[in-house]
Image (cartoon, rainbow, N blue to C red):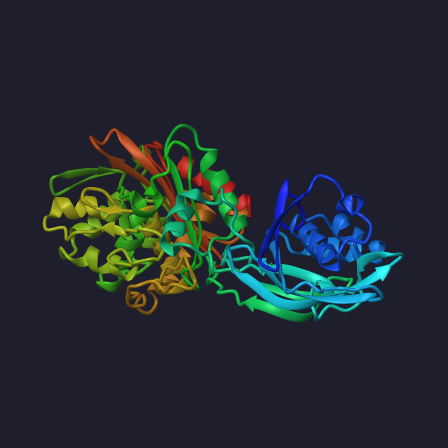
Length: 515
């Protein structure tokens, strides 16, 4: 009894009498001579209920025209079932050539909603046989020539879009999007629908019944497909070590990419996994020195290959030594001995206070993800400060947190990170970097690339950054880091147990080259 598809047997209700008609053979062929007009009307509606446009048209006086309109209506009402209840059948006598039957029609729409209306069927005696006089109004009183009925739906689902305005595909950035989808919940709304009179082109000319769609809100994630693809390619080219990359926009805080390789797995360690930041933390140590009045970027500092500071012996990479050089040069060369000595002379809270400028003490609640920036406790003893000054000991940060560090240098203050534009992040940005500090750090981080430990990145534009080799565990193994920015793109790259910063610098090159 579905429109557009027949059934083995259908039911018509005529004057309170239940009659079964077979849907297998054309009913027109079974009509005896002078079948009563009420029975012909019943045959018409029985064929309509079975979805047989040809059978219904065959009992009309314009079979070709009627068949086309009936078929178009049945096709236009997908998933809807048809039923008609006829009124009192006419009693005809000899000499009468016309008759009329009332019909109450019900289309049961998808979802069980009824569309009900009354219509009239005129019958005429044609060639000594009663026929339904064809008019589109037989199907609905508002139908005119060339028109039919159509049931259409209006989608109401919201959508998850990326920052380019395109729908987010299922396999996009799974380390982030799995939790984003859980956070936003369903974006499915309640679809709308309407039944309308339509013209031959399918354009609605009169709406008979409708239900407005209840649309769900669409959401936009700030991830950028091109940046995400470049980030994923960068971590994927790392060997068997865990590799992670977080990128964001310094001017807005919008997260552009979060990528992890297969060795890291699906647990979003890039966002909350804490690791020793190594020499990338010298951005913080330099800030503490400048804000504490211990040094400026041009202050001469000693850079011996080795130094015993308190009870700790600190060694530069391959024990290189520079003698006495400006702080900016010691920063570019990543001189451990210089920065450990600076940290040793600081108060216990100097490094945590400086780290706070970069968001490493901030507690952001970013919709869609769980994040952590780091753990920067006060260094109460000289040995603790010696190690803290080069990002080791009890100092820990996440790739997400170190990306904020780079963004802070680029922006002058920590931007509030954001992932879903429609859901604001909870948490306050820290105070801006004190006057002159941001400019000094930018210059120092540029020197890292032009003549320091990340010269391999000099061909990738105006890149500014800081390398980091962070010993952990028993001190025989090291993480490899690079944090930096180029234009309005800040990022942090970590290769767990990478041995040195070189593998992170190489991954950074792949990332920037992909952009």
